[in-house]
Structure formats: C-alpha cells, structure tokens
Image (tube, rainbow, N blue to C red; front, side, top):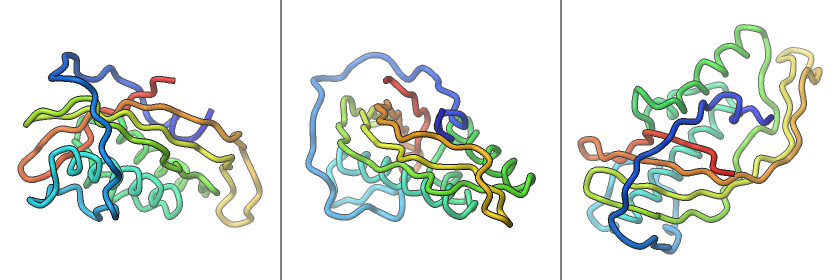
Length: 168
C-alpha cells in the first residue's frame, strides 16, 4: 500500500449538494499559498488550495519538512497523520525515495462560501522506504492510480484541507 494511503486515515467528507458538478480550467500556475486571490473565482481559489496541499505533501515526502502540510490543512484533518508518519521514519533513520503524487484531473464538485469538495485523480509512482544513510531499500510500493475526494473549508482568508478521502 502506498505511503500516503498508510499515512492518511480516510474519513467521510461533507454531504449535500449546492448544484451540479463543475469542471474548471486549470489555474495557470499553482499558488504557493492556499490564500484566495480577489482575481480568482471561488472554484479557482479552491483548486489552487488543493494544488498547494499536494505540493506540500510532495515536498514533505522528498525532504521530511512537513511545515507546508501543516500550513495547508486544518488541525483536525486526518491527512495530518502524514506528519507523524514522516517523523516516525526520520526517528528510525529512514526516508522516502521517489514518493510523490502526480496530479491528473481535478474537478470542483461542490462549492459554497464555507466549504468546497474537489474530485482529484493522481498517480503515485513506484516508491520506497530506504535507510537514510545507506540508501538500502527497506520497503517498496508499486505504482498506483488513485481518485480522492478533498474537502476544503474557508478559514479567515484561506481555503484549508479538512478531509482527504480515497474513493477508488
């Protein structure tokens, strides 16, 4: 099972619907911050926040630095289990190699002034847990395609990830 599936406990997201699913064009460049911009539509703001979250996850997997994961998520998000997973690897002298999520399509399926739901498709390429000093492979995971439902909530002037749930 891929590292992020082990690290992210899956929780049921919000229910209800405020309209038909909408597909929006990709934002030209990913925002380094989950904060909304007045020039972006709510859907574009939500997509930028979800992109920032996945960039933070990839950065944490590559470097062990989980600061950006904490900055893009709510304190009670089960997706924060990634932080303790990475800390546990470091404590054992281990790290991840080639662990990342390659985003495919993203589609906003629901958006209100308080929360939004995004359907995300991504690929987790083959990756390993390795000894940090020797590079010896300790565990391997095959490449796998995923679909997730990500719920983000509006907090102050930012959209933050509240729930990431694998749906396939």
